[in-house]
Length: 422
Image 1 (cartoon, rainbow, N blue to C red):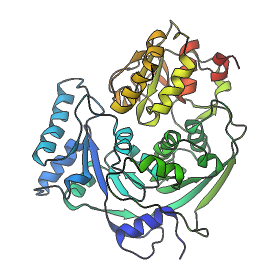
Image 2 (cartoon, helix red, strand yellow):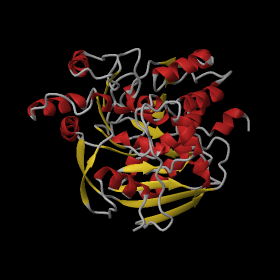
Image 3 (tube, rainbow, N blue to C red):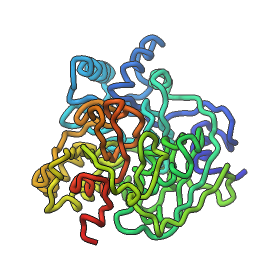
Image 4 (tube, helix red, strand yellow):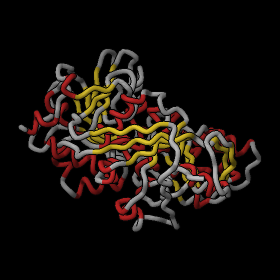
C-alpha cells in the first residue's frame, strides 16, 4: 500500500509494514526536549511517575531559551529546575547562557534532530524539523515527562495535505512569504491534525534557512508537521553536523492525500499577516499607510544567519527611523558569532538598531521588546494573537526579515524594493 513521508516515518518507528490515517500507534522516539517554560512541568511528571533515569541521556535535551538571561526571580527558578535535572541525569544536551540558542535554531545546528527522525518537543513549533524530512511535532509537558521515562509515545496517524509551489520567486520574496500565503489560503485550522507535505520546484531551490521558516509555521495552520522531502541540499546541511545516522524517506508516487494544493508563486509579493491571526495575510503593498512603533527581527522562525544577512543587506548604510525602535535577536550563539565576524553587527549598530543575545524574548510577550497600550509592531515571529507581544491593545504584523528591515527604515510597513531604490 502506498504511503506518504509521514506515514513511512511513523511506520518505521512503530515497527509496522504499513499505516493508514486515523490508526493509533505506539512508536519509538529518536529525540525529546523541553524548554524553560514547559520542561519544569515535565520534570515534575517524570518524578511523580517514579522516573529514576531518562530513557537515553543522548536523546533528551533541555533548552532554557524563553526567559533567559533570567528576566526575574520566577524565570531564574524555572531555569534552575532544568539545570539541576540536567546535572543529576548527566544530560549532555543542556546549554547555559552564553552557549545556548533558541531551541528550534539550536537543535538542527547541533545535528541532534535529523532526517527520518520521530521527534517530540514540549513546544508547538517543534514542527520546524520537518524541514529536514523528520516527523516532528509539539506535545504537552505531561507527554514529554512520560517520554523521558519510556522513550515512546502514542500517535494518531494524520492525514496528509500536499502543497506544491511552482515558479521562480521575485526579489525580496522567501520562505516566510510562502508560508504566510499558505496559512492565508488554508486558515489557522485548515490543516488541523494534518501533516503538511511541502514540495515543488520553488522549494527545491529554496535555502535551508527558508525551509526551516516554512516548516516552523505549519502549526499556524493547525498542522502536526510541515515536512519537506529531503534532497541534496538537506544532505549538505546535515552530513557535517549529524551526531548519529539518519535516513531519507520519500512519499510513494501514488500516495493518497486528503487534499492537494498547487500554487504558482512567480508573481507573489512579500506577504504580511495583519492582527490578530496569522491567516490575515495580504500583499505588503496593501498596508503601506500602517505606521509602526517597533520592529523585531529574530525568533525560531527567522533568527537564522540567512535572515540576519537579509536584514543587514536592507539596513546597510541607512538608519532606523527616529520614531521607532528596532531589535535584532540572533537565534543562536553560532548565528551571533557568524554575524559578528561578518560585520553585520556594525551595520546594525550604525543603523541604530539594538542587538540582543539569543532568546525567544518578545515573541511570546516575555521581555526584550514588550509593546505598550496602542503600540504597533512588525515582527518576524510566528504569532500575532491578541496581546501576544504585550498589551492587549497592541498590534503585531507578521512579516519577513526583508519587510521588517525596510519598515524599520521608513517607520511604516514598507516593501523592501522601496528602500532599495528598485
